[in-house]
Image 1 (tube, rainbow, N blue to C red):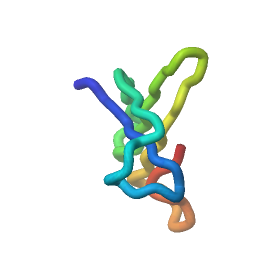
Image 2: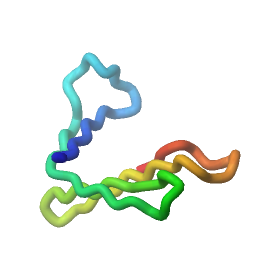
Image 3: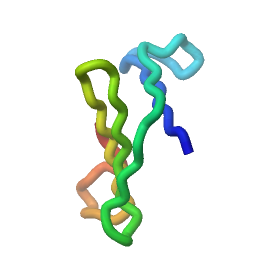
Image 4: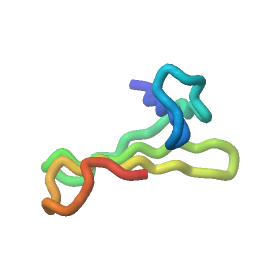
Length: 64
């Protein structure tokens, strides 16, 4: 399945035009607990979005 990610600046709303849209991401699963991350490549940059399903109480559910 093709993965995509849409990004807005911190002061924008979801109905505003996005600042960046990334396509063709790859998903990597980390173990059997559900934690995973998406990797998007855009030119010489790689964007990695981590999703934490099982973690410590002080960790956010996702981070870039």
